[in-house]
Amino acid sequence: MSLTKRQEAYCQNVAEGLDDLEAMADAGYKAKNQANAERSLKNLKENEAIQNRIIELRAINLLESGESPEGETAEVVELVNALHFFQTIYKDRGKSMKDRISCAAIAIQYEEPKPAAIGKKEQGKLDAKTATNTGKFATLNNQPDMYTSKTTQ
Image (cartoon, rainbow, N blue to C red; front, side):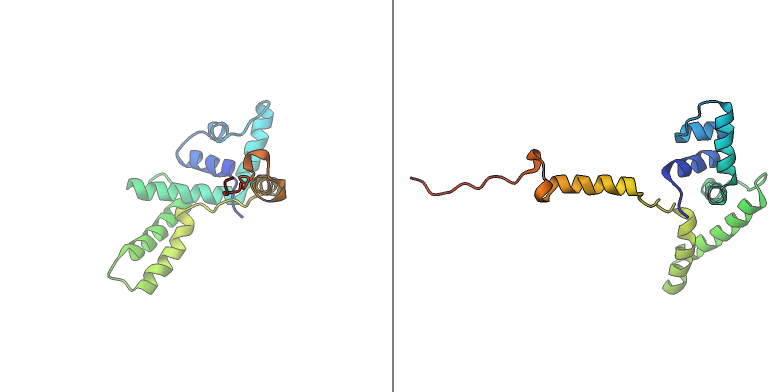
């Protein structure tokens, strides 16, 4: 399951060390009151995909910074070790290309977020925009030039 843009932003904010409520607000979540904010936060914390992504991002941050994994959860430390292993193999030019590609395929899911699927509403907007640029529904701004005769009288 892929995450929405807001969920991905929330995960990145939490992985960087922001407080949960600050991470929600910075990601674009709006709450009418404190109870609403806590309910939204509870939903985010119960989402397994979000929690897994936070672990992945913390592991990647540890690898990039080179800091020791002291104080991190066991899941983060385990992922750091596995991800580091796969990265060292796919970056090693002495290994066979088959092994390097296999390790890169495994590691990429932790290094790059999956794009969220486009919903029906967004797809409808894209289709409408395409229809106004081409075809019989083209607006006046997008009409082809009128053909004029090149013959002179």
